[in-house]
Length: 175
Image (cartoon, rainbow, N blue to C red; front, side):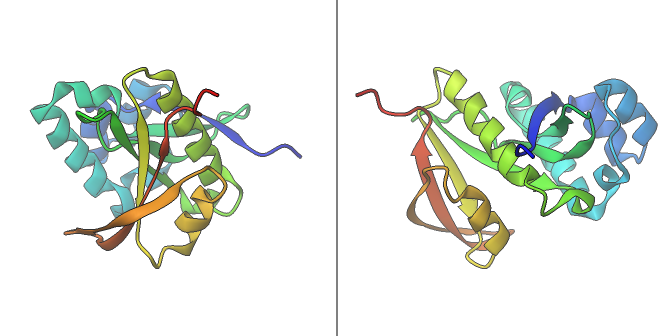
């Protein structure tokens, strides 16, 4: 059986607003995909608020941040992924992804990382892709393994605590 693959469907501000008010049917209508109840869970609703606030400050962020992850070819919404924002001044973007618990341990997180890397490589303004992961998050550390990320340091995150920083070039070096 081939590894799973995903496509990303935008979660525009109207969909994020609908999710924050618990209106799953409206969010489904706006996105055109069958978002699951997980999109209303405490695990992710904080993210919708944070991303709406981010878009209010920088409307360009809407094109880069969180999207619904839809499995290909069956069309099941298995989680969410995107970047923490548009590329910074050095051309760096940071990936973020989360899998609905009903679909974990099936390769979907790796499929999301692969698609995020493909997306980053297709954007000329992106030079570097970063992942920040808690040292105790064995699942995420295993997820990025094999994608060419190198450990480049650590940072303190006020929400998540200590995080390891991993980076890789957006595109392979020409040689």
